Length: 260
Image 1 (cartoon, rainbow, N blue to C red):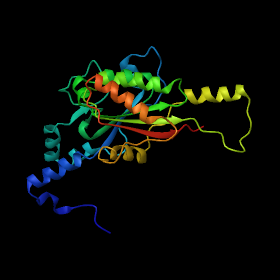
Image 2 (cartoon, rainbow, N blue to C red):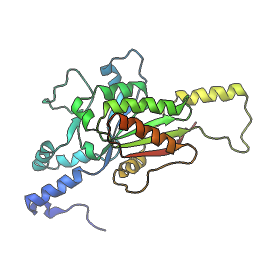
Image 3 (cartoon, rainbow, N blue to C red):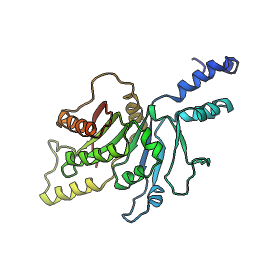
């Protein structure tokens, strides 16, 4: 079995060590804003933000910068920026344990489907929003007119992230009835439908996050699924982003199923 530690690393030339650290810091990753407790409609941005988990889902490349002092100096000199909870009290020059270094060129920003998550992204620092290039968001088949909702979200993202290049849509379908399932009344089906609408969609798993991050280096055709007119949706999104001068390159649609 190959050793996991390269002990002579410190004896390598400084330039080569910097190259290795820079490569490790640029590994594609997913940084997410996901709800951990329900938000209220009258919550302030600071209060709503405290009810969300913000950070890397899975691999966190910036941790490489904690390897030693020189690695930390490299991350501070690089183009990577700090992201954390929005706050009127935050000063960019002040260090904060809640803030993480993020390489926005190689990071997918995952945004929870709740309203307050959209409020939070609009209150992120201006330079952060201008640097975001890849986003992942959720769309429910169970919501009324999901295509119209996607257009509204697209307009929001176009205003918020002017340098957006990649959009990944997790489209959650309602599970279809299987043969042998118990027959239910219209009222029961309606109640089940409402219950699924109100249930929060799950945050991407570590395996899913790894898959979404890999899409940044994926050179094949854009991902689709046959149960929806994703080609029409992609054309509409591309048209809106082009009208807003957003340099969108790829739109991926990934089908998921809402579990009970």
